[in-house]
Image 1 (cartoon, one colour):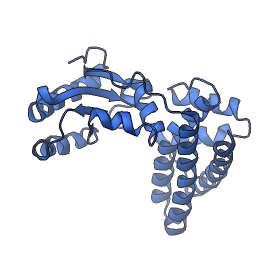
Image 2: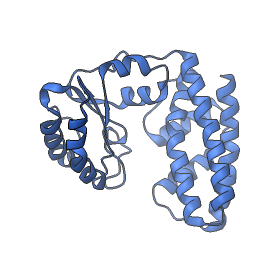
Image 3: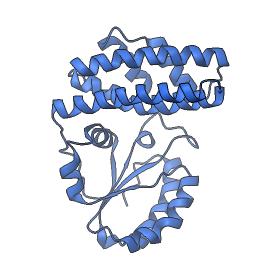
Length: 244
């Protein structure tokens, strides 16, 4: 496997996991194994960031899926979420439905086994714009509902902000792409680019969200204030995605 270019701390976790997984799925059945996400870049935080995998197979057999359950459950404890397991045709026929997801995988990918099936993935402008709009407006509804239900709990509010911001980061990258700007993978550089290109966006709000994700403590009052400013920024982003 081509793990030579993968950072050492990720490789040590991934190597034994993949050895066991391949043995159960069958090497002859595997078309491609792709590592993607923060584990391939400078934003990776050992022990906190996920190690994401896309596995493309010729045949999805439920016997194979059952066989890898114990491996996957142990992997989750090591920050390896269940891998995405798909047919090659799934990629070809789903880029129009999940343009953000496929671009995120394409732009961060490290092919560690088999074929590079994502090199030519390129959704249309409108396909990408529609999913950006859907993601942002979906997050607005999600955080409003959760705030009404759990707004008095600082722990819940903190987790809500972290989860929502994680979901919005890929959207920010693709909003830049829609404007004709090549998005950086570093989150700090990304925020700076978004603020520069869309001057209505408040840099301080997103910087505080980055700090929150990195483990910085906030008081209950600060969390409520951050939530309110984040909500305002999402509304601005929804308008941008609607008209870009």
